[in-house]
Length: 343
Image (cartoon, helix red, strand yellow):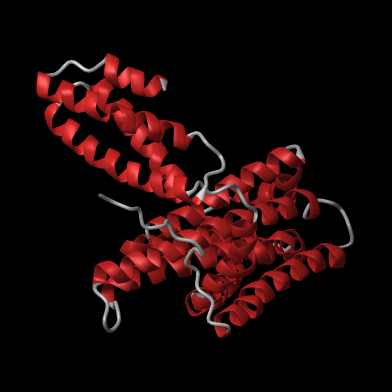
């Protein structure tokens, strides 16, 4: 009732509109009362729909005649309350969250698998070649890393980097850093070239450091400290890059029966779903890097943990995602807003 009284009290308009409001005040009072009830009979539900339709029309009429923003806001609030009562508000449920992680995310990872698996394979080949080249040509390494810096990196900094900060702080730091790189790959995917630049830059750095460590006879140390978290971390970056390139390719080759705009929108939406999954994926890799990599456990255990987690991701994306695809699942929400009744 306060809402309706505010409408009447704040109304400052010509006589015809004043009469318009006075004539319909009873309907608004009734609509306001029905929206506040939790249980409605069938007759009251029908009345609610009818009054909501009328109030929506009244709002349109008042909006075209009244410049008073408070009046319009008050009547709009009444219409919104009526719409919410008609359509029914959705209560929070964990079901969509569960469906996202069991169906939606693995399905989109599976559908984009050709892109991120190709990116992974290409980066592994090029990265291995760069490491071998830099390990065999230390004079080339010196053009990028001064001898004193290289010696300190090999003997101290590479290992101490993983235990320099408290584990929880280090995990948060690498999580946000890697998330930023993944975000760059996804956000710039529509332009394609920036993704290739990000990949090339990170690949060069990994190849340079790996080649330096291998050439100095510390190759085992390099792989022991890279692999426990690197399996999952690098795969996450490659997934982001592959999905980003897939988005960019959509406007180059949209496919039959689709406009470039529609293809780009569909791929971008799928990319955003994968981005949500990468947040969790990179969190796991950050925990591995902060707690497992510098743990001092036997090398086989550290590497084995990282390898098992990586295999679990591949099974999640390829096996679970493939099953969802064969079932004909969709990544579209399982509920869409109901069509609102209109006057």
